[in-house]
Image (cartoon, rainbow, N blue to C red):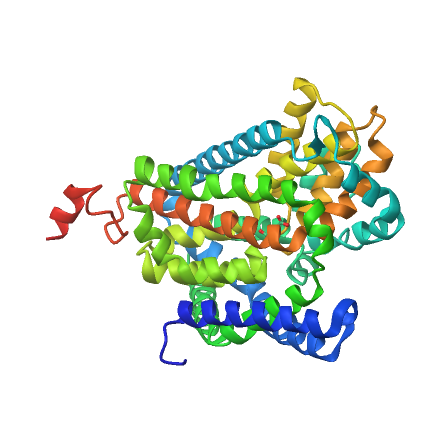
Length: 458
Ligand code: ASP
């Protein structure tokens, strides 16, 4: 087992985890959630593996952004990279939302024969109390957004999250990623603006910290198979099959839309904008994709994404340190697509019809909130609540919709695993496309797509 490559070890752990989780659920029945075995698996996956990855996020993000930008040639170098990065984020997110919007309007997962799905509707009615509580459970600061509407709307909420009351408070809170990025960018610009031994000392120390964090990531990844086994088995053991059936068409709609973005839209961007062979890029990102799938957390996967991009895809430290940490929080294609489908699904189940203007505001809000959502499991549920509150203000479905969010929560895990993989894959595609546009030679180019570059290599 230990001679196998990491991605094979993780795949085997995934399969074994599913088998062990199913066995636990079969033998322990509905009580599986509290059993000692499930607790042990959860401990291995959540406390040890995700815990270790989360532990290094703050120093990793800070040191990556600062070394990445301080290494750029002045503010003008940053401006160019910044505009390209922002352009890519907007383009890929808009593509994702368009796919989500089309899928939910074509497949209408909340309706059966043109009427709200009776099974889901009655499930929501019967369980509204229980699910309302569960819905609130995800509404903590770690998810990145707050449910209360800000007097200045979603933008006000985002800016408030971005400027920390205290630098050290932000640095001690994994949910305050926007603040951390803001502090890191300020520090990096400050370093570009000053000169002398002070600047050199800070750049050297931060560069050293960055090197150290990357080394520690390598060590943590040795535990990945164990962590993935723990996460998969405890998730499967606790997910009951009965409700999955009632929500099947919703889940299929989300999975199909995510697959379309992952297998068609992003590869097309890779081919046309980056002239990169998508298959080779996909292979380079294997470990990161498997980690994001198992952890359902873009932030926890960030160290692995960095490693894959630099070691396997050949993207420079300069580009990946800038594009990835920002992307892990700001660019969430899978999340934006998901929010769009989920809100419109809730509207369908509640028997509300959303006109073009209302759907457009769902799109804009999905785009904005996906920026503020933290890269942690189930974080988009808070964004979904915020969007519903904004769109359904004057509509009759406003109150009951919160219970519907509970129903979404019940089947969220598997969808979260998939959308997180889309999130990090999009970040990595952006990094490769931008690296190629900056003329980086080491980036994997598709031979058959870009014969000029392979000739150049020869
Ligand atoms: N789990 C997602 C991520 O980490 C966020 C979400 O959509 O809930 O990227």
